[in-house]
Image 1 (spheres, rainbow, N blue to C red):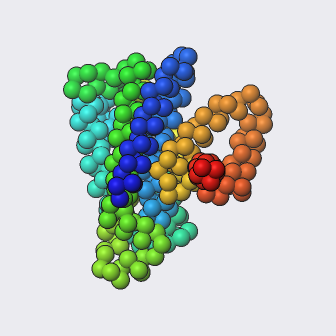
Image 2 (spheres, rainbow, N blue to C red; image 1 turned 60 degrees about the horizontal axis):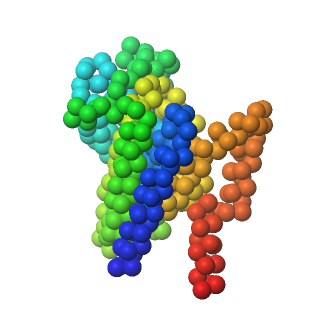
Image 3 (spheres, rainbow, N blue to C red; image 1 turned 180 degrees about the horizontal axis):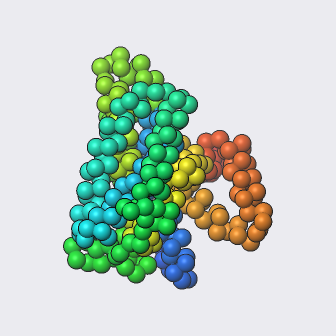
Length: 316
């Protein structure tokens, strides 16, 4: 256990050092936008990975749930002049209750039935956000004002980067502790065998709901932050493509690995920007890279680091 804690601290120091160095490499506002989007996608994927990789529950509607929470935050702030932090708190509480309620029937399902149920939730949210134009702005979306914390406005790119980076490091630290706790062991047990966990007296349905709620809360906070940073939100954030994109990031990076979800989110956020030079072949190349990784690295990109570490220890 002591070795695990020391390794966690070492990993957090390395992550923090990388995040400190990155701003010195960013040339302009566009690069800052990509960097911040990478961080916020990573935050969502780390939460989603807790659900998929550790609890073994698939969700194809996470984009919709995250967008609904972000819309609540934005509407309270923009239309009703609520302080941004209070709006975010209300949104998180509402979405936690909402996620808990819908998790009860949905998480009783297994396999593709569970995937279809979460997909249905996401589609309903997407249709609702498009249809309720008088509240949500419809397909045109809503303009978003600045985000302030106790009167301190987070506006320039560097401030947003620091704010997002600090949140990411804190989230990784918290989730590392959760995974290594008795709660984390129960989650992994549920992933491997529901019946085995039930046989020792654990309430499987309750733990599934808790993990689902945690993952939704994280997604809502990150999506709300991006809405304030970009100054705009539209129903596209709740689309099926967005939900699939998040799942692919988790799988691509490495299911059941916190840093795998982080790496997958960063890689697949940056990759489309790199592939713009391919013009008409951008989508084809993007798909080919994903297929290549899934075939030759079924455990995700992070498996490369595992092989590298094994090679180092073998040489030593």
